[in-house]
Length: 120
Image (cartoon, rainbow, N blue to C red; front, top):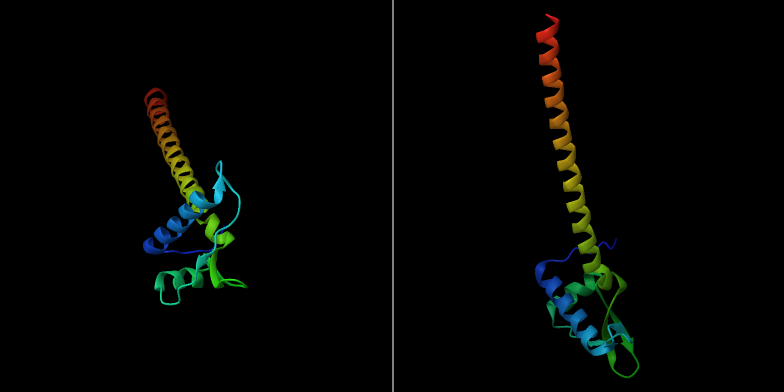
C-alpha cells in the first residue's frame, strides 16, 4: 500500500489530474501514454502533492520542468477503496462474532436454567 496521506483538497486535485489524463491520454479505457502537466512553482497544491509523492517534477528537454503522476499517485484511490472494503469486511466479521457470542451465551443460559430446574 502506498504511504500517501492526502487532505481533501489534495485528493480532489489528484482526482482531477487523473480524470484529465484518463480523458485525454486513453483509448477505449486503456491508458496509451502518460500526460505531463506544466510545473507551476507558485501553486501550493501542486507543491504539496510533489512533497507527498503523488506527483513528480521531471526535467523535459523540450518543455523544461514538467509534472507527472507517480505510481503512488495512480494507486492512491484504488488503495483507498481496497482499505475501505477491508474495513467493512472486518466490521461485518466483528458483528457476526458478537452475534454468535450472544447466541452462545443465550444457549448456555437456557441450558443452565434447564439443568438447574430438573437436577435440583
